[in-house]
Image (cartoon, rainbow, N blue to C red):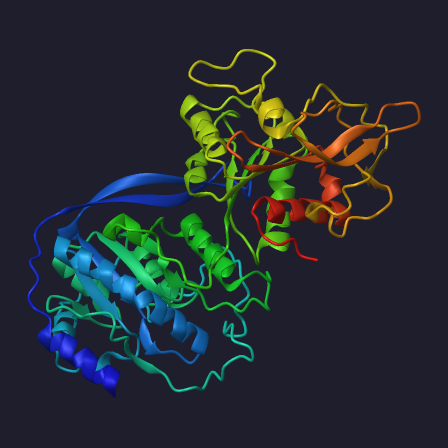
Length: 513
């Protein structure tokens, strides 16, 4: 009852808003497949400019109470920030449309409800539906299993729990706003000359995609739609595939939307300040840069990251361009990274991209590197004009000394060196020798600053070589490197544990026992 009274007071007391004409400059993140059918996607950011008067903001199903207690809590947590964003958009002249599905009766004869009801019906380019289901021809299946309803509480909530379907009171409804839960939203947009739509609310895998006022339906009408990716949530239970954290589940659906439906922005892009994050979302941001051919880490690392890191890290990938092997589109994401993993072989990035990499390393943040990353930015010839190399990366950053490798047909056996058994990275690593598929790199001698963890050998009479060690950058950043990383190494539990341990250690997290 208190929530209902509060909502009514907001409707009555909110003062008039000066909606001056303004231009919105929004850095939209979108995903473009590196080549058709590759399964690899560039995540790039491109600014667009929209007239505020031609833009609508849709607030999807921010109900006061959901049947799932976890969902209700997260709605409450993001509502305050959402209200800030809505207020900023409203002041710029954006049309705000509140869409609490099945809850519009609560608003009765309010001017906001009448505004939507009175919009004349507009001809749709694609027939308007009450629900836009998954479109297999356009998007394939969702990356999460939400077949159990998606409640992440333990035990799961009863789906018949009562719900308060009016909008949460923390989000103000201004006098020039509209309220609807149907295709009226589209009719109103046509009436108001809206060409652009910013969607926010819950839940990405359900209502944000499927409701008649949201992403699929509006995309079908050729409106420019963008999702505010930090002010949304997903109905996903981590006990279902792909068995990652609830927040990683949301990231996966956001990526799905960026691939097949619309670009995304953040609340900071419109209202300033920092991107919103839920209090329980403490995952460090790991950026994995993949630019090599022989060892197929563009296939092995995404599978590894999802299976081994999906509960503890927020993971972004940067892939080399298919047409220009030196180009690393989207590598500027390093500006937001807490940790980087390199799997790169002999690339000369454009000067600005190499500078972004150097800047990250100079910041003192940690890095992990595998296999060919010992010669990540070293060429055998001259770099193209406008591109740069970093041949000292191995010696100065990794603490290594790569100068070749033993023949591929010689079997490599590896072991933990004496005195390193107590290092956190060695947690759970076999005590004896174990065989890997990577040919043995020649890496001796290491820098004096390096700490040797593992050695490898290929036969009697041939000098053993370091295969795993730690180092520190001049700025104090933790570094781990291993010369392992053959595709079949990822099938070995000990190698997967080694790499996972190293990532946890580098990030300053407790290595799982």
